Image (cartoon, rainbow, N blue to C red; front, side, top):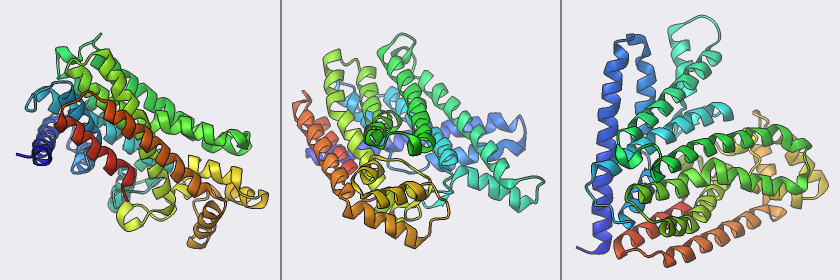
Length: 364
């Protein structure tokens, strides 16, 4: 069996294992919640819908961090860790969509929108949007609780005081801090010093996305397998710049991506008011009138196709898109150089390279 076919085989078995464990875990939770009331079933249904399918990127990073540190391929603990990460990711997405007022996720209604539609379909009293937001907040909180419950099932390797537990705890706290920095910049950014907008945006992507998308899952897998400190440090040197490049690519797609592949309306990040590195470059490099226009229009939920096209044009013409692409390239190069220094065997090293290449060159 070639290294490529072995990677594909291992990943398929792992993904199937994670999917199966998620299905069993949520089936048990559904049975438990049914004893409370049949009315709460949509909470479990929403979580189940969100964790079905997807790229399993974070779980795969965790898996190859595990394998690179000597973990065996068929160990149940790494499958459970992948399940916990998928549940944490789902919780983050649910809350993120509420915060961003995003009505779509993966080409369908987001969780708060689904609850709002449930309200309207049944002709219930009061405001459907407020009900949708409240129900989705509770669903996200429940999903976060499930993530912790799943991770705890690992046992001694993830017990209090272990390196894996510390990484898992830090990951969750940093995402919340990064999310706060994101919403703070949306409201404070327009009155803050424009010269610092790019650095503030870089800090946001590091803590809101890069660390929990790449760095922490890879380190978590390594820690569960007993990786020494120097290997975990080497993992970080590779995965942190990769995670930042990954999020920068996401920001570019949020403005220039094709809705058919991203599953979100064109220019949705602009309507949501995201003050990304891309936007930071634009308001610093555009002429004053155009920078003011971007600042003024950012966060307007009623932006039409012409408005989006105008902002895109400014971003391109002032060099903000080129600057962002250059930053993606620099971070990618840094990640791939660190990857080559990792003291790993051929299969996990090649697998991480494949994941990295897909992360920075994706179209969705």
